[in-house]
Length: 234
Image 1 (cartoon, rainbow, N blue to C red):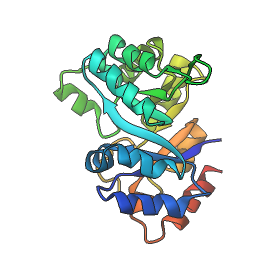
Image 2: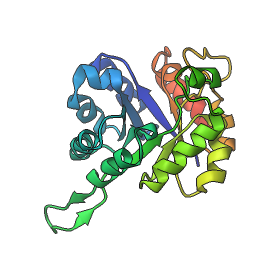
Image 3: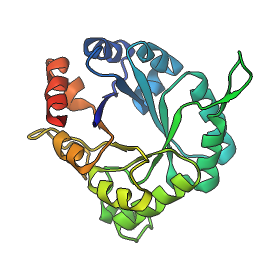
Image 4: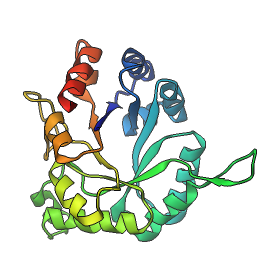
């Protein structure tokens, strides 16, 4: 069954924590993104972790050494999943994956840490947008290419728009969890998203996780908004 990740993207730590608290017991996964992490640092993770699993969506993209170091930091904070840009290359993604393997202090054995999710093409990007940054290949081919690279480098999960779910199922199979942003309930504003679907459409297409932010967090009743989306997921 498709699961809901609620994106806590405000700069106010207490406002984000209040939303998480209101959703406790109904939503088990929360996203900490750039704005929240930038304003509160690691406290963003710690403040939300008590309410559910933390998906740290910082989209790491740097030289392999730096990305590996940051991956170790995030693993140490107990995040459930974090993102890296697959466009950073095989070695960069592999460095992140390798850094998530943790040593159990009690047994001394190697254990798996957080999942690394390879970001393919941002949901705000269109085919025209890819061309402007020198990636002239059609959008689906670029998504497939980056997904294959990330999985080959060891990333156990992928991030894609809802419109590329079928293509990635064909490319990497059904065992790789797909995290899908670009979700907007029927009638809501697309804002800066380009390739979108409703929660129900994404679930039927085969998303494992959908990421929804403003339609829930900016609602007058976040819990009611979340319940409506959960009902749409079936």
